Length: 117
Image (cartoon, rainbow, N blue to C red):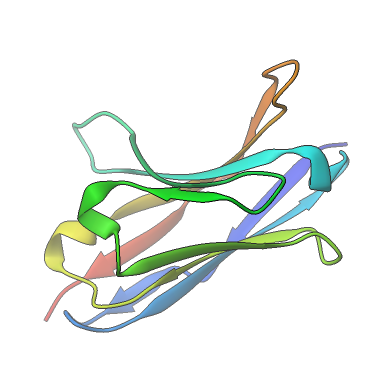
């Protein structure tokens, strides 16, 4: 049974930091590409960051230099370290695992990040 369980969301003040994690089970973690997305009510889900099976990373422009995506294949966990958070980072954050060959994708349940003073 495939499971992606997210954790780490919460309320933080502007300028603060949070670390999101996504723990996976039920599939071959190491061969998948991982992405983080975020969504604000009434808007489309927005891509945030990517990490390939080789560990190569890409970021949406607004989070470059502030967010860091990482993966631990042994622990089957992908993380998103978010620093210097702003009000505009408030959203529900989702992890996604995608098979680069079949393009089968799995999603986490989402975790709320609220940046507020």
